[in-house]
Image 1 (cartoon, rainbow, N blue to C red):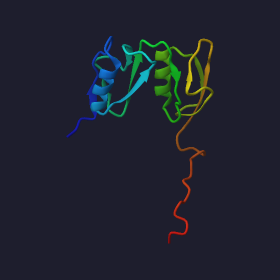
Image 2 (cartoon, one colour):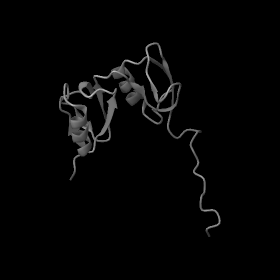
Image 3 (cartoon, rainbow, N blue to C red):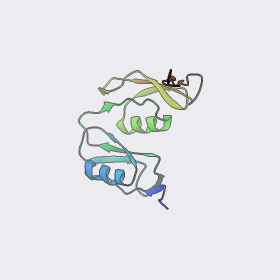
Image 4 (cartoon, rainbow, N blue to C red):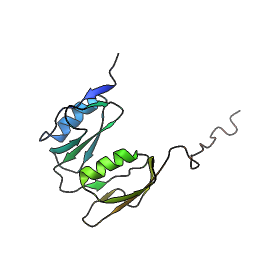
Length: 136
């Protein structure tokens, strides 16, 4: 039986590509923060047993950092990313991200990200269109 949990090592001062490849081989989703090549912080930390369904965040020795599109990320994952990256933000709601003021941009001093979360499967649920029209 394949394990659904994974014990994290300490990745401080290790090369991003090596660690990322190792974690992904184990089925872990890796979120890299910044454009650096060396890891300077991580979440969860060394020795933590994490579920393979959780993300592992690796903060790099970056020169620039991008604010990604967090759509559908959990509030906890967004908080983790922004706190590690030291990006100021305000947020409303709970659950999963539905709206953000900045995305896919390079973070610059003075920017504040505004985030909106809502519970999954609320009234804004997307109804899939029937694409089989006339195929009877």
